[in-house]
Amino acid sequence: MSLVSRIDDNSYTKIPEAIIKQAGLKPGDDIIWFYDEKAKQIVLMEKPEDFSKALRGLGKELWSNTDIDKYIEEERNSWK
Image 1 (cartoon, rainbow, N blue to C red):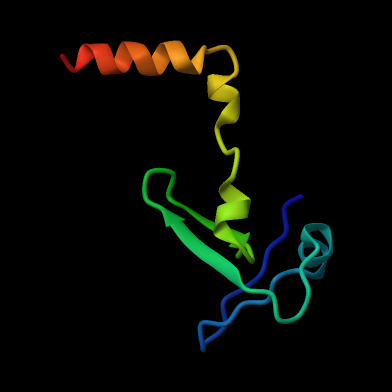
Image 2 (cartoon, one colour):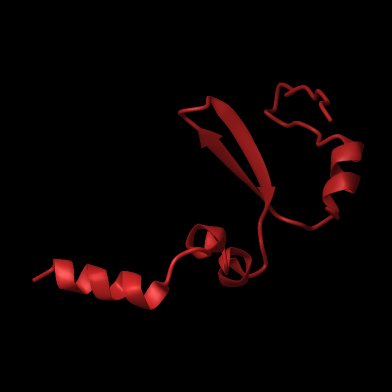
């Protein structure tokens, strides 16, 4: 979905209603604005109530085919 909104003279913009509904946002929710320098894009995301819970398990698929104990042992041995 691609929608357009305009920034007014006071630097305000309105989030399109369709985006609000699709994202499940409601009045009083906080959103985080982030500018990605590399991609030259503005990213908006809902601020999680608990960052720890929101980030828990992030990237776990990277380790799904790895024997964690073996990996840690190899790392520790490489320090010697």
